[in-house]
Length: 122
Ligand code: HEM
Image 1 (cartoon, rainbow, N blue to C red):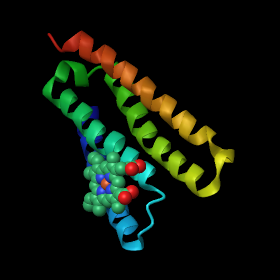
Image 2: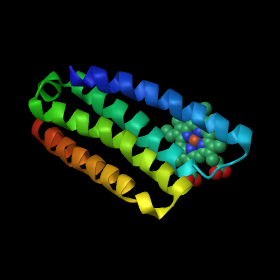
Image 3: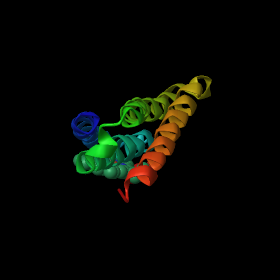
Image 4: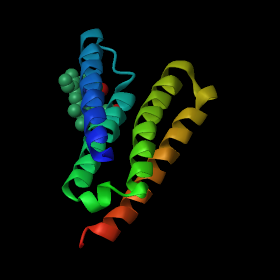
């Protein structure tokens, strides 16, 4: 089920994000801190919580809408922070990547809002 996949992916993302934080600390170069923060929060914390909701409420997690939501969330949670990092390192020319990533994340959140409203009281 999509919730299990989301929790597994979030654990790997959080591990990678923490290791990246340690690398920032070792190098004393905090330029990529915004990318680190968004990777850990959207790809680690939020992705895990949404996956957990799908496991707790199987009627929500087994729907086709949840599968679409989960894949959008996983793709956006990586594309957005990677895009932020690319813009920090390479400049504004590639700003379409974080813009696209952020729109995917917000679309995923809109779908999740709909799913929660449909299932939270069921
Ligand atoms: C081993 C674990 C972690 C390490 C070593 C680490 C390291 C860092 C470092 C070095 C910075 C930059 C600080 C500065 O700019 O002075 C930072 C910023 C930040 N980290 Fe982490 N971090 C870790 C885990 C996490 C986790 C789990 C989250 C969120 C769930 C998180 C969220 C943030 C946020 C929100 C910022 C501020 C970003 C900004 O100012 O733009 N970090 N972290």
